[in-house]
Every structure is written in structure tokens, then in C-alpha cells.
Amino acid sequence: MQIFQEDAAIPRGRKSKMEYPCPECGSKVAVPDDCMEEETLECPECAVELQIISKSPLSLVLYEEAEK
Ligand SMILES: [Zn+2]
Image 1 (tube, rainbow, N blue to C red):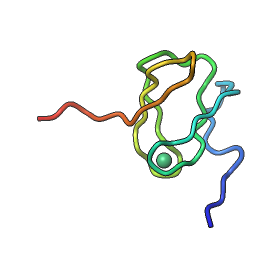
Image 2: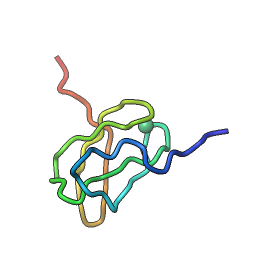
Image 3: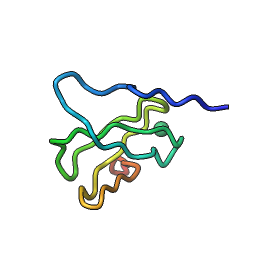
């Protein structure tokens, strides 16, 4: 069974009303209100990097670093 933590990993000083399910593990990732498109966030559960591709509607994708 998976336990969701309600207040997981919201950075101090950044308000977050939005959350988005991690495409990797399904945990809710807090998205700061003042985030920017193309900003990357780290999933608090599985530590993948997620990139905000759109704020309206909110959309995050797995962020893959450029191939060698
Ligand atoms: Zn995750």
C-alpha cells in the first residue's frame, strides 16, 4: 500500500497550491505558485526530475538530461 504524505517537500518560502502526480511513481509533487515553465522540480518520493512544460493546464513531464 502506498502512503501519500500531505505536506511532503514544499520548499520553505514558496507557497504551493498546486500539485501534480509524478508520472514515475504517482506521488503528488508540490508545484510552487511562482514556478516558471521549463523549471524542473524533484519528486520527493522517487527523486526523478520533472520539468514543468505548461502551467495552464498544469503539465509536468519526466525531465531527461541531454544525451551524451
Ligand atoms: Zn516520483
